[in-house]
Length: 91
Image 1 (tube, rainbow, N blue to C red):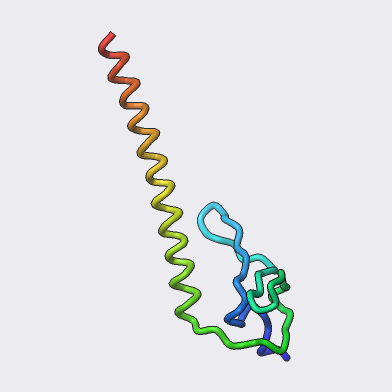
Image 2: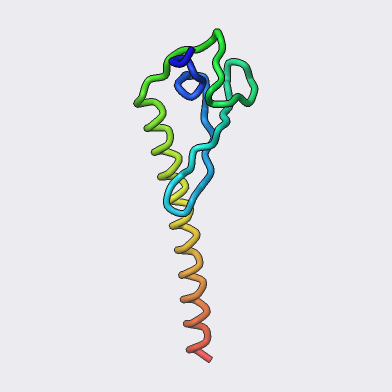
């Protein structure tokens, strides 16, 4: 069954690791139907083809959320650094 591999199934959420400039695909994922970790090239009787838009939108939302958190942390560091500089000038 070449066409019914887990990475194409709607129940499989593939794991990714964060690289320097992109997310890297792993060879494993979580099957919400079997409630277990599966290999991406495995297959089972519960296979249902996933829609393309669902996965892309979900990853986009996660990426944007992580970028916003990183920007917020950088902003906090810059504000702290600025406050320390202002205090040192006042002395």
